Structures are given as C-alpha cells and as structure tokens.
Image 1 (cartoon, rainbow, N blue to C red):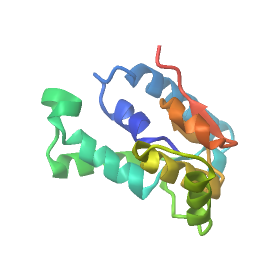
Image 2 (tube, rainbow, N blue to C red; image 1 turned 120 degrees about the horizontal axis):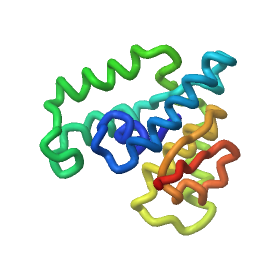
Image 3 (cartoon, one colour; image 1 turned 45 degrees about the vertical axis):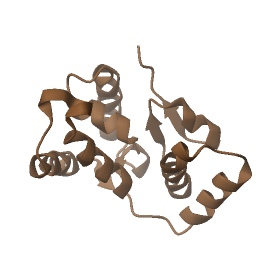
Length: 149
C-alpha cells in the first residue's frame, strides 16, 4: 500500500522522488507478473485516494501542473484501472491497531494520519511503501522506506 507521498511521486513526473517511485512501481509490476498475489498488489485506501486527489489540485504542491478536481479524480481512476491496483477495504482490526499506536507512547499530532495508514496496513497484512521514515516508529512488519537519492 503506497503512502500518499509515493502515489504523488508516481503521478507527477516533476516530483523530486518520481524516479524512486517509478523504480518501485516497475519492480512491483514485475513481481505481479511472476506471482500475482495480494502481496504483490498495489493498494489505495480511502485516505491515500483522498490525499492524492487533494494534493494534485494544490499549486503549492505541484506548481503550475495543478489539476482541477475532476482531472485529479480522473488520474486516480486511471491508476485504479491498472492491473494489480486495488482499493483496500478497512479491516475490522484497524481501530484496535490505531488505538495501540496512539496510546503506546507520546506521538505528535502531525503523525495522526500516518498512524491511521500504519494501522490499516498492519491490520490488512499488506506492505506499506513510503518515503517517510516516521513510519518506522510503528514497528510494522512490512514497511519499505524508499530511498530518496
């Protein structure tokens, strides 16, 4: 399950991490050809879908390439139409995982959405893919922090 920052880097060629995100995408596509399993699938969740569409509309984020809301949503739909890209439904255990993350130790409020994404990935048993090292604090068994260089 790519984080919002990975989906954004995939969607915007001018993004500084586009090449790293594209390498991951290409590797995931090859893995799906070799072993088409849920483990190899690339997942959106509602949070990553909403975040991607919102950021694609923000000139402060994507510059002059900012899209209208209908065009940003259409770009999300193009991703979703690709083989191996799915929408992860919220697992029943997600809220319990979230509670464990936010009560285990002090956590800044800025990590609230990260905690939710980590809880969703952990409860669903899918790999979380990100550029954000803050996700390492959640101790996910399956988390990849992509290199940014």
